[in-house]
Image (cartoon, rainbow, N blue to C red):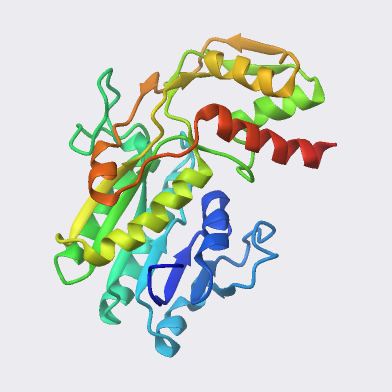
Amino acid sequence: MEGMGKLNILVTGGNGFIGSHLLEKLGDNVIALVRPTSDLSRISHLNVEKVLWDDYESVFTRKKIDLVLHLATRYIKIHKTADEAKEILNSNVLVPSKLLEVCARNKVKFFINTGTFFEYKESAELLNEKSERQPFNLYAASKISFEEILKHYSNNGMKCLTLRLFSPYGEKSGNKVLIQIIKAGLRNEEITLYDGNQKLNWTYVEDIVSSYLDSIKYIRKMKTMYDDFNICSDSCLSLKEVIPIIENVLGMKIRARFIPLKGKEIFFSKGDNTKTAELMGWKPNYSFEEGIKKTIEYYKERLE
């Protein structure tokens, strides 16, 4: 990474949607923690050392780790069973807390965490880092819980920060709703969507990746031991506003059918990235139209 010096970096969740894009930019001196059941197809072309989670302590015995980028997570929007609750809490609180303890014992200097906009209480106002937090689901509550634990470790000599992501989208993002809409359009299939009036800060993956790279530069000169930042685009669009943009890029109509919501949903979530721009120097470079065009090109190639 140009201008960042040589850091030995440990990445969790590197085989995921955002993590795989990030690994492509990090270059040498990177180790990716993966689970035995992980799908490694997103990173199979990369020359990155991969270590199983069960064996992660061995990494610290043979190599000095300077920085951890923590992207691994277990996302279940609305859990339905005690086992699912246990899975969320284990993956998002207990396991990374154990990793933090190992980092502290091995004097890791920096830890960059990944949060979510679901942590904030829904508001018609812009959401900044000081906005009230009221977790939308257990997943968001688990993220808040881990952040509090992270602050404890930051009080003991490890510089830590959290990047709170807003509605990521882009290539290799699995079966998220924007990808479902794109695929339905490419296949000329009808798609059923809930409501369609929810306004979200869709944030393109390349912008999110650049925020991690900027945060690596920032944390090395950070004057405090802990900080948090919103990572969000400047626009807020509903699905009903998104579909005509996708149709324009595809050059075809999308057969979308909207039905009433069956459960709770966030209807407005627009983040304020002022603090991120002022302190970290990060701003999104892609408009929604630019990001969705690149995303459509990626899936169009794979569905033809």
